[in-house]
Image (cartoon, rainbow, N blue to C red):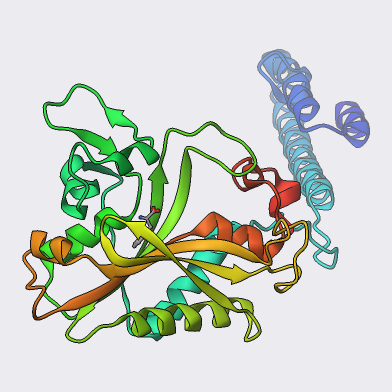
Length: 337
Ligand code: PHE
């Protein structure tokens, strides 16, 4: 009974599950105090033995029960402590991960795609790495043509044919016309590459959107109407377009198209260098030789084509004065759009 009282007292002050195990060994284990008593049972008289035996068994059962209930309560305490520690206040406002945004180049490109899809155009794709034939020769730029010099081309070494990074998306005109019969109505947005040093208005990589329409009876007025529709949807009904005669080997006649300055609307300011207008794109009627090169009868069909510089459109749209901002991925710049 003394052992039982002692055991219960020690149990009372025990606060850890591990320590509880030590107590079990101390009182009930093979070398434990109760076992020691049971081992001496042989020395007892026949009358004493059952009495002491019974008592010892009762003590053992009591201690075991006390150990068991102590273990249960310690476990319950531990569980409660853990739950309290892991408690989540679901009413606290969450921390938001910062949202990314579409790049301004992507935004304006998407707008332009939507406008052309609305006019019944399809989107065409072409290779960024192409051959001399598709980028130059089929577009009426034979190997010795001086206009090649104006497009500082990156050539790819180690090939027998001339392989290069396209300098203009006009190469997609050729791919499309080789694979598709008129009527053709496509735009092709994409990256182009020229060996230019980086500054506020130049980059060796930039974006163009090519347009091509080939059908019976297509004229320059279709070109004008299409471009005017595009610019009014993008920049509002007040913007004005100016068509200037120009020359491209793959269009005849050719023109460059300017838009009234986004800043001053045509009066002249520092943004347009007092010109009132900003150059946006090159265009013209597809040269009959280009149609023939692609197996399209130039007596039956005519077409127009244009190539616009996406960076120009974006810079005008958002009043950005340095092209490099579009490529540096500074989030302080990007999060403004
Ligand atoms: N490819 C020409 C350029 O890069 C633009 C252009 C496209 C002009 C289509 C006429 C027709 O300058």
